[in-house]
Amino acid sequence: MKPLARCTIATSLVLLLLPALAHAAAVRGKVERMAGYPAAYIRITLNFAGRRTSAVYTGSDGFYYVPKAQAGRCVLEIWNTKDKPTSFQIEVREPSTQVPTVRLP
Image (cartoon, rainbow, N blue to C red; front, side, top):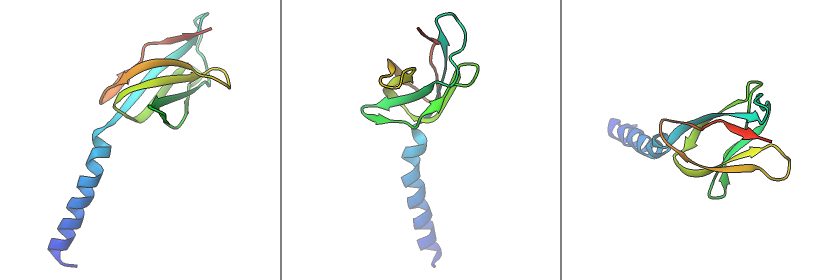
């Protein structure tokens, strides 16, 4: 393969990957019960206009971390029941977003 062709391919790959890298943000927060103790092992998702992220779970301390989230407005979904999540509008900003502690009943 000629050097110019290799350079063109490498440049094309970088240009294709840049948009994906430019919008990566981390989202973190904590979920507690009303009594003030951590809500452990609760499923968390982010919903961007119908496109849901892969689920993450709170740790035993109630903290969660969503890596590589898309920047922008979305709905934080806390699945404390099997059928319907508790939902909050949030704004995800680069490079990271700290969500205030959420208290569940």
